[in-house]
Length: 175
Image 1 (cartoon, one colour):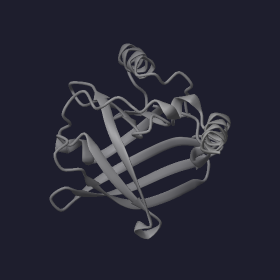
Image 2 (image 1 turned 180 degrees about the horizontal axis):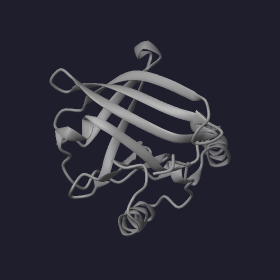
Image 3 (image 1 turned 135 degrees about the horizontal axis):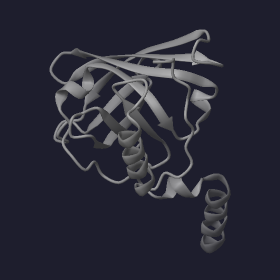
């Protein structure tokens, strides 16, 4: 009976969980400066996800708040880079002992928390690769809405080397 239960559970997992979810994200490769959590980031690429369906020109703006905390203001435009804004505000906290490379954000008034990892970044902090620990989702963020072609190619190669092959590229407003 125990074997049958294990077999049924494994079958359900295999049919409902994407393969990418089984492989956890790689650990962050570099420390992250505290300045990562200030200013605006533009989303260049991401793993397709239902929460960002038809989200164009997405931005995330961090504002420092206390020792290791910050506020987050996210904007998504529906349908096009000039579409109607959908705004989301929340808070976050850097996970101590991670060299600022991991943080948690609270959603729904603190009822749900999600951890994120900054897997890699440019030495000049001009771009960063952020993911969820389970390996399900990844985002390529840039300090500019349009990345330099060489930097973008290098960052996307790194995203793919980390195991994220299926990406979508939201529109950004014209430079």
